[in-house]
Length: 187
Image (cartoon, rainbow, N blue to C red; front, side):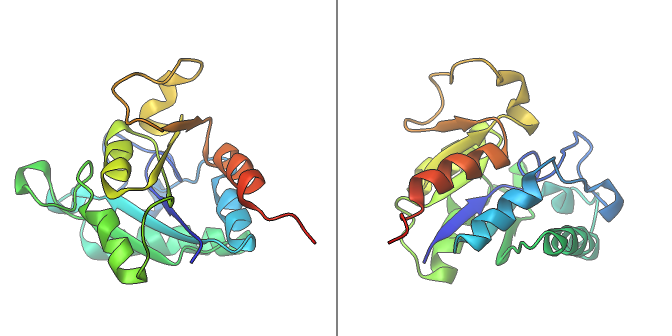
């Protein structure tokens, strides 16, 4: 199975220190939806693995999260893309769960659900904890310089990021590099 795992806030959509709590607050980053569509058209299944501690903090409920995702999926379908599954951690740091990134539990749930080995599966996110979770789960960590790491544009990758982390300007740039490298030449 050809699979790409993505973080949501800061990777696919604009993020906020106040959390994305309603469909109206959810705004796709430029080119991100089209990048997912390109991955889909190349035969890749795209799955989200996202921390959503706004649930655990009482800032929104599951109905609001579902409404946000409904808006996201509708906009994605309009450009010919899809997300095959959405995995989220509703917990806060104080809950000490195993699914909150930087721990790999949420990504491991993806592997269990789809019956895949995560070795070589790209995980794309916008933060150190995304890269730590990806590395711990055995995925290939791909950092996009949007969201939490936007200030790193033009800088080298800091040494505290997991070995093998690749940097891209945004999700669209990741798709360009990834598809060029992984598409088989036509016979």
